[in-house]
Length: 278
Image 1 (cartoon, rainbow, N blue to C red):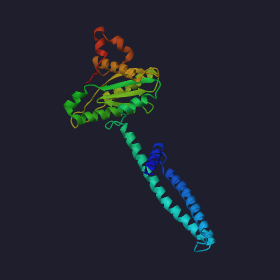
Image 2 (image 1 turned 90 degrees about the horizontal axis):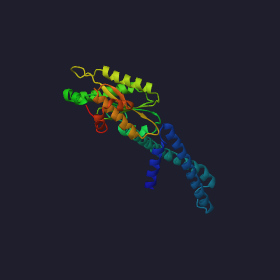
Image 3 (image 1 turned 45 degrees about the vertical axis):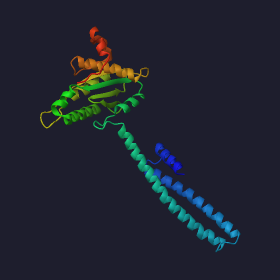
Image 4 (image 1 turned 60 degrees about the vertical axis):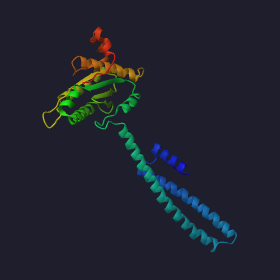
């Protein structure tokens, strides 16, 4: 019995059957109607059996009137209380689970999607551009000003990215000082405008530290994302473009199409692997 109840509760949470107070009241009403009908039918059946054998202490009509109404009142009251308690408990569990799942998909510092959630959601997008942003010389910021200031820089960059890229686009913190954005558009011109707005707005922002304000810049790599291209391949192309942006002076944007033009033959092997930082 306990196992079946646990399975039922889990199913209700998964289905979102108790998301609102209206759902709880609907459950209570249905439970009361069912319990009252069963209790009344059971009482009438036993009353009829007892009356048939002359075992009722009072006339059958009295049993139907007084006993029936008493049965209905008790069954309805007890069932309503229990159903409300169960419905409220399931409602609270549903809210707690939803909050936990939401938090598990967000980066705790920036409030953006984390890498796992971003990668999962990218699979639902058909066409667009994958953009990787990396804060230039972020290790130097931490070394000079401390990790608290570094955290403030991460938050400030996240705020600018959220401001520039509306909810139609996906914005995430990929880890450390790297952010990823999936632009839901197949217009390369629009992509370039948005990316440059984000890069310039971050460069113009000053993060207060208690001393001198800190300014940072972004290096950016862009790759085309489409249904026929695996996310891993798109990421590698954007990552390679980002590596070039770092190598050619930072604070700039490079699209994957520019890679072959910018790479000298002697450096193509180096750019094909390894991750860049700082």
